[in-house]
Length: 241
Length: 170
Image (cartoon, rainbow over all chains, first blue to last red; front, side, top):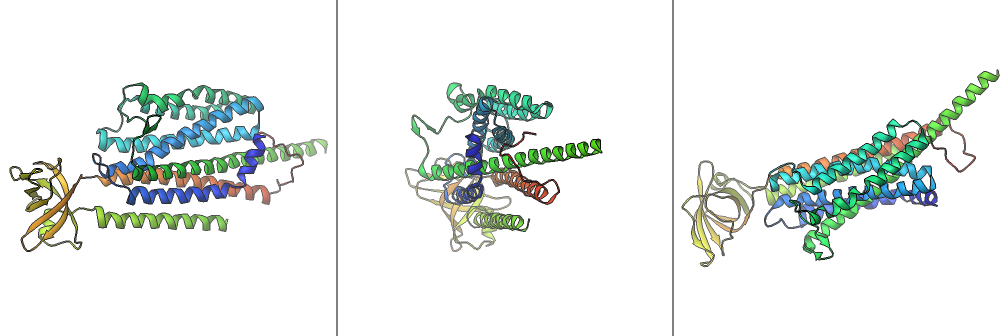
């Protein structure tokens, strides 16, 4: 079933890319030109419009890896395994970018590039888990074991997601708490709109990249399989002659 | 591959347009000049953003009085400033800030209407550039690899129609 859904969604890949580009360009316009500067931070607050959406997208990337891994362990669908591998690579990209832009924002506001804050530490751990997932896949030779071990690692690593999300609430933290929660929304509309559009744009970009990367891994595997089949045919012809 | 490169050319044109607009907006609305440049008349806009330090012992007036006067220090010269309206709380002596207002060349007094914080735009620009350069490079390399793989499968002798729908895993 999941295999069919992925194949069907792949047909609309281009639309996801176009929608992502539109939302990102519109979000950039609103964030850089239209939204007001912050009273305390001034213009530096505009980094928020790229940092926060990147952080949301990296959480979404890992969530899709987590759910895909659960599905793979249940159904052993190779296409879902490709999707998980693709999601892990994208988690590394988005998490690293989120940490880098966060450090750039922290320097003028906290006067330091890095601090041992629970949210920052748990985010760095997410980067290590996703990198470890990719490393594990390169170390294991057997494709079936590779997929299984990697899925187990992704599921165990899923415990980091709620820690990241609620860390600013659970512990006394330098990082600001959730702006959108059960308590309500603690930001004005002219900040919320560009932030939401950029988040939507980057989430759509993630979905587009996930489709392209899944296709890339699928085609690579297909090519390897075809090459292997051809080689075995040549080998059979040579041995029979 | 031509269609692929054409699509990417479109994306690059849009990105360059965005960068040009951002730079134009910065030059027109956000770039600040020094008190020396104001006194020398090196400005073309009616509303100016002047960056300097509020001179020690020069600040008179209060929010209750609804106005303030002070001197804004540059590297070599200072500018007489009249702040119209109640001065904000961040208007203090020895504080470096940006004043937004108009230059009255007749009375040689800068008529300030608002203040802004001094911003290092390098942080904002570097955050956006790093994020989007990495993302665009990743999308480009992945899309190109997919296009190349499709071509390799179609053009090489490896191509043969799949008989079964199930795809082998490695």
